[in-house]
Length: 238
Image 1 (tube, helix red, strand yellow):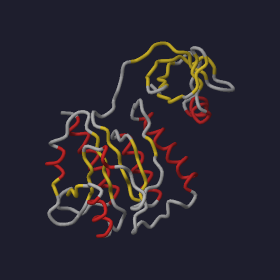
Image 2: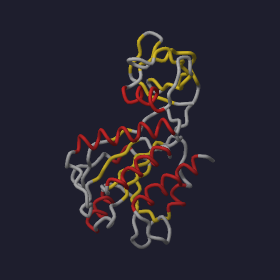
Image 3: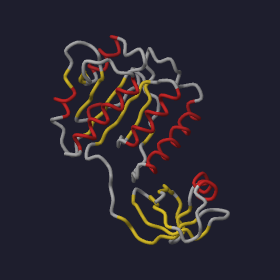
Image 4: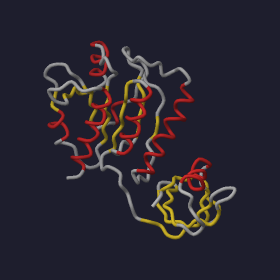
């Protein structure tokens, strides 16, 4: 069954976004009376299509009790990478349950995030929305504004702050995750293709980040992000 996130409601009718109207009308070729899943204000409903033109409307049938969220709240800080890699990270991170994604302008990033940032952000928000619908989430991850080493988040509110590194003698991620429990908050930061500079890693440690190793292999940035999120999801299943 198709799932759609909506922000407008008139009486018992949900009004789908224009992009979703096109999906219903032209891609799925749905008919009146078909049932769809609607997520409105972080709550899931079953609804029946009652109008297809000019705007798709779905009438509320019943509320559903469902929450596929992780018991941990995970924020991913992803260093700027090329568009295709970033698209993959956004999509898969959403499927794996991330709550927030912040882009980071690292010294070795080959992409300048500030170039047409507002246009990029709108595009990224569309990617995570579609991935949320596909993976049956009830919350869409937030896309945060650009971070830099001189403009970062308050790390004191997180239970765990993890820095992916290939430096010697960091903590092994398995040992860190084994201590996590329901309700913990975690922020993960992953470097660009060329990795973080020594200065950046030192600054992150001053901010309270714990350097962690993902194993003996050196992983690509997109692999590292998704490996870590997969590990978090795995321990969340226990």
